[in-house]
Length: 282
Ligand code: AMP
Image (cartoon, rainbow, N blue to C red; front, side, top):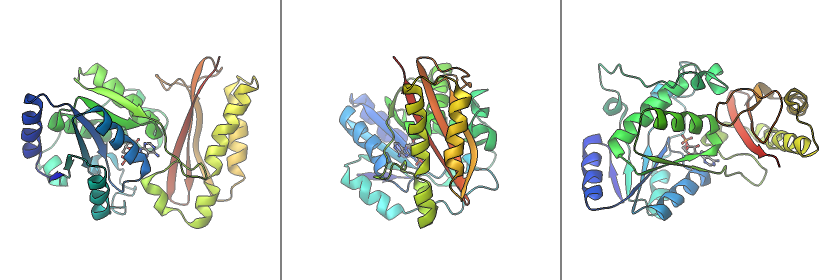
């Protein structure tokens, strides 16, 4: 396993591999790797000749009041996990290599970036799309692996790839959850024991939505109301949003048709958790 921090060096290595006919699967991460990340890495290994993982806590996607400084960075453990998964290349750039002095160019996916999480985190998705653009230019992957856990991010990046003619295929992998239903996230380490217990309600609320739809309730606001009621029973839960949206446009759905995305963001103390469930009918 090669570990590189210089964008030019990894770019050269990858170009050489591609000239030799090797296909490249790429998994961008912010590190603190868990089984969710590993499912993406394993798929990248299965599908391609070379699997590349980036570990970069991207400052451009954190707001001034957010957790950039305290975001977990267990690099040694991350590298051990990558080695175990037989990752071929790990890219760990330094901030100043990605954003050197004078950096002023950003990529923004209009509209989609302002919805849902974008409303509470202005500039977040602009930071994501900018760094993913840079990473794709550096890595020039054939396939990009993303998680459904960050459903809005996957929609926005897919839109950007289509709009800007990136020559990359996108594969979105299902959400990996713990036994208690809680979606795995690097931020779960911030949760106290009681918050972690309370946070199980998120998956229950998503399932309540599924059950209501299965029983013929297609009125989104009725479902959202019941979900909010359930979540609010937890003392430490502060709802940011609960929404039922079109899976592509992320626009709100008043009436549920064939396909919808139920998604939510809820804070437990300072920790903001997101989760979602795609529900198809008929
Ligand atoms: P992050 O390190 O949080 O930026 O995540 C890197 C990638 O892993 C993103 O595409 C995430 O959507 C994906 N990911 C994070 N958590 C999970 C999970 N529980 N299940 C599946 N994919 C995940």
